[in-house]
Length: 285
Image (cartoon, rainbow, N blue to C red; front, side, top):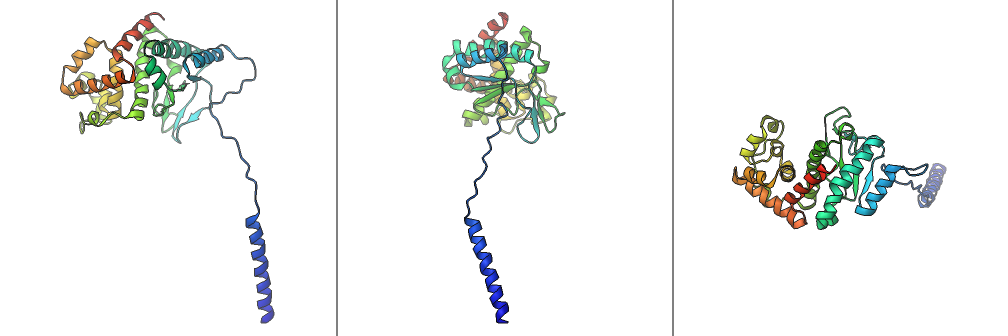
């Protein structure tokens, strides 16, 4: 019996010694470089679009991406890049001539402080739930402070009317960044508290019916964040006189307009002046 205990003791002692040295042995961890899905490896000389992107970066401080691995924002959200020719047209016409150029020239404070430092040109819509589901122009990308992106470029025509309308949507998406960055404000969220349509409720209203309820567009009645963005969008789509007629319909529209117009003015941009400048820039295309 003593021999059994002795052997058991020796076995246990050896096991503990091995375990001790195993636990104290330092093992070097292999550090793998993080995956940068936006990194583009150039195997040859830069093309014309790359040179244009360099110019935009140098003049405006925004890095444009048109090549990237098909990206997944979360496990159910997908988007993909567009073609070279469409990316070239978009970077030149939309990013440089219609967006960053007017901002820097007319509203340098807003340009310096509120522009994102990255812009993604996305060919597909932003797909939700599956790669074949319905999508949106910029949802899922623009709740970030540093990166703005617009989708649907594969199907975009670069006519004056289409580009001008696209700018309203671009500023709508940028408004979501301002919302995430600064918030809408306590007072704003209580103007229509408890009266939002949700989905699919907003689709059953026309814009005129929504305005009677205090929203600039029926989609603004979906939720407070879209209420905020569509109010900004309206100021860049309609003339100041037209906006004044809309806000005269009820006190809710007037309150929302006053809060957002003042908010943007404090940040350095007069929305009505920007609307006029966008019109003139589109005519020059």
